[in-house]
Image (cartoon, rainbow, N blue to C red; front, side, top):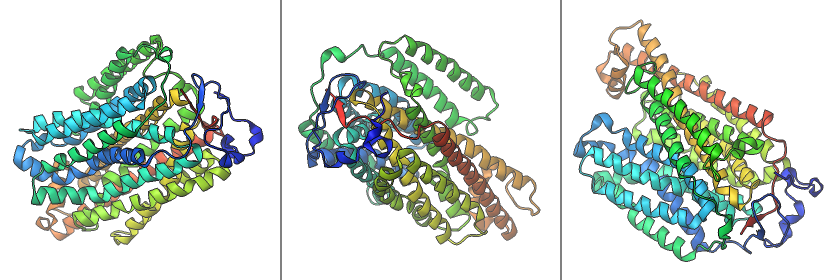
Length: 537
């Protein structure tokens, strides 16, 4: 891939003088997959931006609004033993379809993929609202996830298509603010709907939002006409192989240690089958004319480094997003609302530093800005292990606030930077690979860190100097929910065991942050090879 001219004087090949040039200035762009045309003049129409934010809101709200209604859903439909698949099934569908939708958007354009994703998400929401038992609801959540995969990847790609490099932090910060608002509003809205209306309304509320986004995209989003000669055959065999391999691997990670032990026959069989399918994917993709997962995604240092770093980000995010609420309730004694507030302050500082990161990477470059952010994140994560027992609520809340600030400085420069190194015809695949790696990292992290937490708690229970503690891990959740049923000394010991487990979790997250830092320093190029601000016809 061609690097930017070193005479421009800016980091990562970002010309300082381009800030004052018209967005449509024509510059030769070789290696982008076709003839180049200038970026559209001016900013995209407001309805287009609103439609993108609505599409992102559908995905962001869905990840938070359902959780608070689980007791009502289980009380109505039953299926307590499998309700976790309301989330796991959705996550599986989103993750394994990201690469497929990314390649399809590069082949057929962003607009048809986005319209299909919104329509499918709308259909899935309608089906979820009409579910008659837990099995049907889980199946319909998978349908929602199939639409969510198209939304999540295509919206991020369009944000890079529609904005020139100097404007991308603005739209990315808006997308981050959507996630932040959803993290705060989702649980509250879900609780209100489940308590005062009916849990089915948490899905029905998606219908007007999805319909409005669908209409606005269809009416206002315009893409350049692409030459039919540039379209190769769709790699449906590769898409099926990627879907099966990813689905089987994530199924093994989600169920391992929960439905069966890690070293049991089901876990080993699923992981072995995943390895076989991975080999099949490699073989199929090598033979495909237009592979779903092209080899250049990993042969280019910049994209490979960002993929690995974002995988580490997905892993470390398990600590604050999954285990911090448990810590806040079980150790600090806060209620669900208080625990949610402790965690959600992270989403307040994240968009702020994401928006301000452009002032940093314009001076020191994408890689160095991200390296500073993740290095500070490692220090913040490690500081959690220094908290006293029991800590005061403001102390972990301050850590979450600082963590959000550091990760905003880390994530956005990598996304903006890697999208700027490819042309229009490769941007969808590149963006999808980054999001895919983050999702896989999150799934792997949930499995690994849950195993660490279980091992820590089991060891503390086995060596407990006080009687009255639960003898099995399966009984710990009930004991934590009703600590008054335990002797005071036993309840205090159990809180200490949970605190120790979460400390180990944050140590693991610290290691993931350090790994991301090493990837940036050892694998990523010092300057990202930024292309001229053009896109292919």
